Image 1: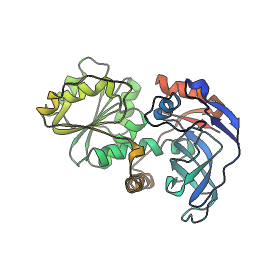
Image 2 (image 1 turned 30 degrees about the horizontal axis):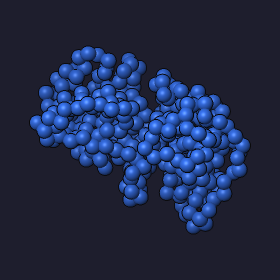
Image 3 (image 1 turned 60 degrees about the vertical axis):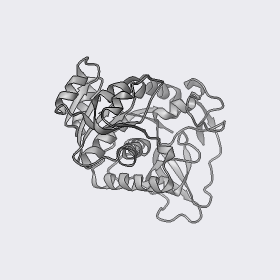
Length: 320
């Protein structure tokens, strides 16, 4: 089968297509034929060698994907060959024609959801739920601010936030992004390129600030978030691309907190709870993953550049 193989960390050109053997499903494992593989920003950090935990070389990237069950290992129940599924992690990587997964990482994909949106479920929706519920302790009626709400995790967080009974504000950097945030259910959307957007958010919150802030780019926005957090509020850092200097006194005067979220740090029990919630939301239509920008598998370098440059429309995916 064809797969992307990385032999050394570096720029996108290290993503090389190669012919490799199709893996075989062992006990407790599922072999999935990948129809679409999803690309997440974390994939680009790992490929560049700029992530705290790096895989052994060589490796095939990819945590997200959607496709059909090709084979079942001994002891796997609840799945059949041919089932449509999405993935929340793999043992061999999704940038390939087939991926080997633990059974716990294989989830039903409703028929009304195509493989392209299905490939954007695992990491974005799992991260959004973990950030909101497991790390952010979101409570119905609270005001949630999603800083960077037009991206894949942000969109998932808007949908989950509405389902959990929160008031939802979001920020984006383009008019298209602002429209998307509102279309997904946010009460208001704010242009973070507007010099006055912090005052606009503060005024819209009645001067109280947000009870919970989800932050996608902490190295740019964390100090600003500390100006917007309500008394005893929580700022949950989901992503950052560098360092930032902050003044802890901003936290002291409000008894507010900064927390961090990392989906791979979820325990097996937390992982099960996360995807039970995701699966329920997909089944009843509460969660609505969107389409993405498609690249053929050999064009993985171009796809990674699109993610890094932030110019892609929707989720970036690969087609094996």
